Length: 362
Image (cartoon, rainbow, N blue to C red; front, side):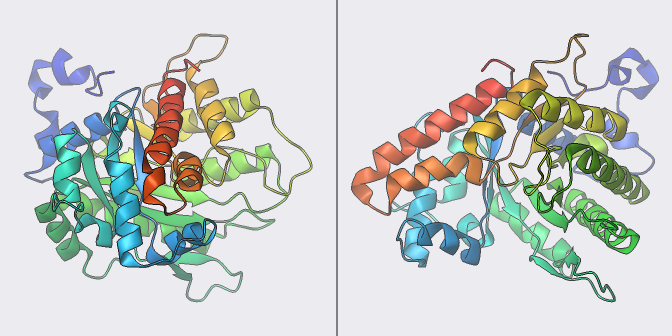
């Protein structure tokens, strides 16, 4: 997979398109393109290990592990020291605490990942908050204040990409125009600040599966959301070749009576992307959105098997899963050091399955 558009070489007057784009000025341009391409290598995905202290606490509660810093550090060390996971993993999204932590032997997590050829990344948003003036319970994402300075600090620590999550819900009149515009604008401002400071932005507009809507409604809302997000990204001068999209798959709501086959989910998701996601974006790395490990893998595999017409995709379709990569690993670990090998084996099995799915070879 070569993310460089043909025009970059076919037209002798545009051989340096990365640094001459009228809308983007940054000394990091070539580095951003190279990093985004490396994150989008077919057969690899990004591990979302960026759970906040509160979220990882919920995961630990399920296995009876105390939520203290040493246990969080030990668990992330288990993940990052898994022998061979670098064959299937291009990058790891970390929480700020994790970015500055080290292995028990003193090796910084950032240095460990780099030694494996895995790109370190950082979650930079500060979580969802109520959307001011909104009476429908919708949210926006906080964290723009001081973001440029934080990005510079994270780059100095070794991070080369970042992630920001916006959260939207589907309802009879949701998401509202106010919510959609606010979240799309925040994602674009975040992405622009990241690129100015050398970080590839993962743009994550997550549409929750909460609700009784069918797959057609999810497709309609996802198309509307992604169209709005990309309009704002272009408006803010974000270089599409130097970013990653992390969307939800198009699925029925969790309370829907009308199910959808894996082939239907794959077809609806790919159709929505073809209508909204520019070919300049090198990688689309899906969030799992609460899907089981099996469903997340099967849906990704179906997308990459293509359709009856044999169409290929202009972007790499792969994964950036959290729970769908870690659930079996956590259950095997249980906070017990004697279970580390079994937990790492469980992680590796799921990674390998999703690697195959990103190639359509399950």
